[in-house]
Image 1 (cartoon, rainbow, N blue to C red):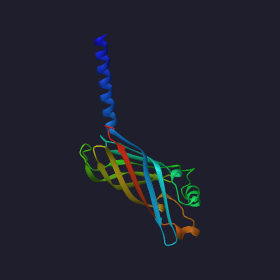
Image 2: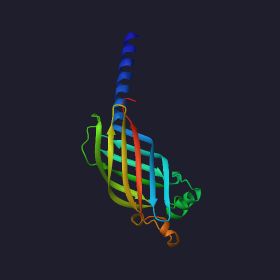
Image 3: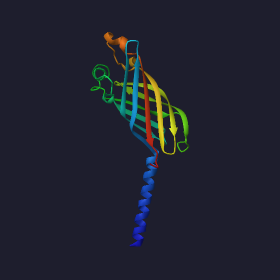
Image 4: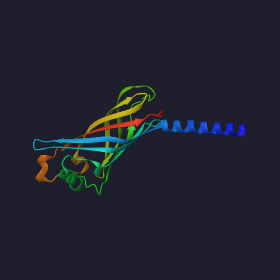
Length: 186
C-alpha cells in the first residue's frame, strides 16, 4: 500500500508540475478593458468595455484580443444604441479581434517595463487590416500587464458616418486597452 501511495503521489506531483508549466506558457486575461474617445468641436464621444479577453502564448510570442462590440458602455444610452445599430452594426459584426505576434524578444521571467510592438490583423466591422500596434508590457512577480494605445481610422474599416452627424464623430478614434494576465504562480 505504501508503494502504491508513493507512485500515486509521484504521478500527482508530475501532473501538477506539468499543469503549472502549461499555464505559464499561456497567459490569459478575461476582464481587460478597452475604451475609445472621439473628439470633435461639436461633441466628444467615449465608451468603455470591461469584458475583453486576451491571450499571450509566451513560446511563440502570439497575442490575441477579442471583444464583443455590444459590451461597450456609453454615458448616453442613445449614443450606445446608434453605435451598435448604425455604425458598428453589432448584430452583423458582433466582435472585434486582433491576432498577431510580439516583435521583440522579451524575457518574461525578468521583472521590468518593456516597450513592445505587435504585428498582426485587426478585424473590425468585418474588415481585416494589417496593423503594428505599440504597447507597454509590465512584468512583476505577481502579474503581467499590457497597456496599448492606437488610433482607428473609421474609413479603413468601412464604418460609414451619415453626413447629418459627420461633424459630431471624428474620422480617427483613439483606442486604449489595459490587460492584466495571471502569472503561473497564482
